[in-house]
Length: 90
Image 1 (cartoon, helix red, strand yellow):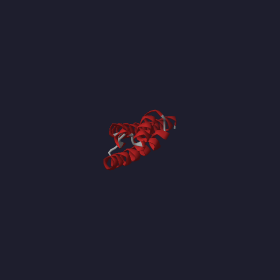
Image 2 (cartoon, one colour):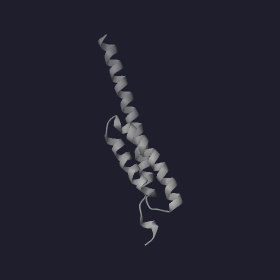
Image 3 (cartoon, one colour):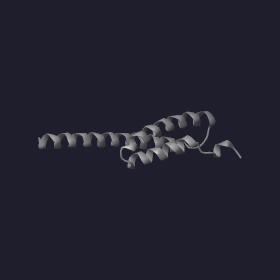
């Protein structure tokens, strides 16, 4: 049995954090950053150890980046909404 059959644990963590960053408000920003870090770690480990999971790491990176962008846009939207609503009421 060869080592190629094992999936890298960091790639599984990166895809999980990336998917969760898409759906969990506010905490998703932190999860997205964690997913980006773990996907970079996974890609480096996969190059050294020749394990499976490169696709998971890539998908985790993409989901994490999209999750961070969505979370930042959501926070920006909340700030804009509450600043306009406080301006209108005054």
